[in-house]
Length: 203
Image (cartoon, rainbow, N blue to C red; front, side, top):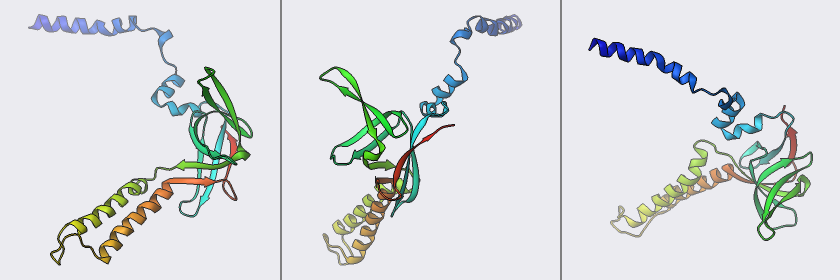
């Protein structure tokens, strides 16, 4: 038993040496590559003097907020005079425009379309706010369930398929609150007044 223990310790003592023999410095990841590997979204913070979009918005329900769009982020928008809704990935940002890539399947090639910031009509934004965003979906469901439970179950009058004003008021309030929470989390920003989109640079 003692000999087996000594032999095991002898083998383990050489394990780090074998590991070092197989280590190839050329294959080691740089600190920047490790940073990107942990989170692909970190790529936008690694370049100085890089243009990105800033959306300043002031809404009646959600108040003032600012949202940033970097190259590689998706942006949902409409253009003035057009009914088409775009949801595209930003390829690059210049001083007064941004570019996204369109795949022309008929021609079998990629096309780059430039969008001038002054031509943007509306931008669809999303902000995840704890409790608020979840409530946007759960409260309407809870209100509908509350009204449905009162409607299908026997009440104090021992009758089904009836409800009262108080039940409708409580259930309707839940659904109305869910609608307000939805408008806070999911906003459609029209470019006018204090609502504007512009370009800034990283540093």
